[in-house]
Length: 435
Image 1 (tube, rainbow, N blue to C red):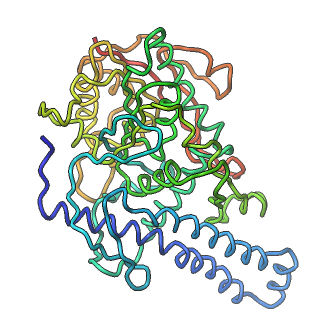
Image 2: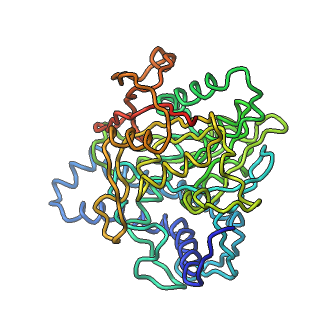
């Protein structure tokens, strides 16, 4: 049976969804105001200083930023023009506030009908911003604002800006190098593990699917794949890219315009990114691909054996990419993964340990282990991990080709490769099996 939700839980879900849609709609006003602050600062300068800045094109650059903001806003409005993926009828309130006019019956699992899928299944996940301390707030809770009018917070806009960068990672040619450093090793291990098997019969789960590219790629390889996502920002956005896209490069976004720091040139700041780099609807007939919404533990953690939730022992593979550190209780995550895998099933993991709820201010529990402790815990729970010594490896085709059970992969996450500042994760990569 599905977990039962109180009226308060349902109300919180309704309010949160409405606030997320409001955030999308308020992007232009918020971002234009932030850019206008730069103009106001410019006018505080002595006349000679303003003339110097004008002579190097600073004022005209601000105007170009305004134009790019409006282009982003147009794209974001397309995303929230289709909230039907949650069965919502959302009515715009004044000043971008949103009012819901539906009775949301929230279950622990909600299937989203994406193109090219076979049976529609269920699942969840939540995404996180790797470079910001977004972990201090629970994204499901409304933070001090009531129904009706809603003014998006800095936290809300940070999530939205991160979503734009996630489009680059998952659905642009610009993000290919970053995708390849993470997704290719995982797909290669998956293919090798089930070599000689009929892939249509191999059920693969991708929790924390984000905008769905890894799950899509796995389905395109011929496996029966289900993505699982929790964040409304990700779910709304993935619905557009997977369901409403008709051509390669249909949309143009400007994901790097929101900060002027560590930018080498105006061209780098205003760099347009075209998405998608492939046509998402271009899946072979009969492909079994679905993306579903809900909380990972609420859906897959149930110990019930209701026929509507046939998860225990039913998944042949679970792929976790930048996911396990989103756990409040990593013990629960690993138990769920182990329970839902079939005997002989494989868990393929890649990611750092940026514990999402560490030092949170919402009184959420947070268990933070080091990498060796995570692997020791996995063995205690019943996984068999390779005892091979981890290696330091670099990004590149040669290293991707080397199939080994355990190693470290250096990779970035939604980074701007033209920035003067970059973050590199030494991500743990391993294959674990269930006997």
